[in-house]
Image 1 (tube, rainbow, N blue to C red):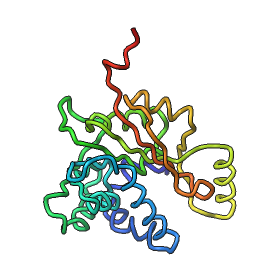
Image 2 (image 1 turned 90 degrees about the vertical axis):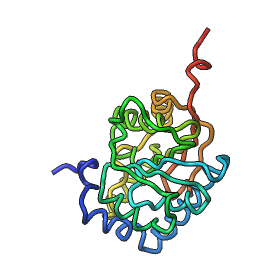
Image 3 (image 1 turned 45 degrees about the horizontal axis):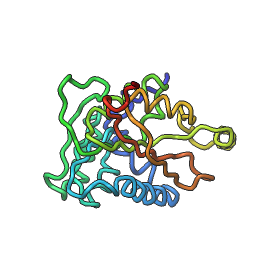
Image 4 (image 1 turned 90 degrees about the horizontal axis):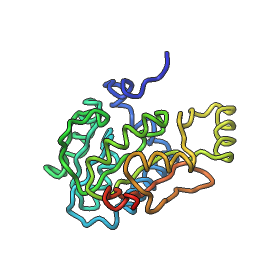
Length: 222
């Protein structure tokens, strides 16, 4: 049976075990710490006390980092089970954390707007056309900055993935992205790249893209 991301994370067992299965080892704890710190850096120009939408919020791991930096966070996820874990985890933040179950690819015509948006650890699960649909939905929710996490595709990273599979490591991202397709993804979602950050480029394929919304009026050619 093929793995279907939209259904996989709706499982109570998957949600309950998600953080433990990925971030309980020494390497997982290190990655978790570094990624949380990276997310804080990506939003450092956004004034504190503003509200960020986290899509998909999952178990609230990265929402926790944003809350710790002084932001309010609204988490959106297709999985009620993942959001239940997030709500339990973040209960000490009170009303600064809110959440809802929704499919960002099928938002209504009128949506609330947030000061920024985080879209992490999801796009690499889908082919490019579905990535565009997902990110377009996320971008609709933000007034300004959108921070995207993805898996970079290059000759070097393809070799690393083959070696990892040979030694029996967990499969890497299903749909990593190259620089050409990053431009396609952002343009079709109405975004432009402002800055890119990396965690250990030699070791990790994870990239963090800080993007801003394109003003349709300013983007028109004379």
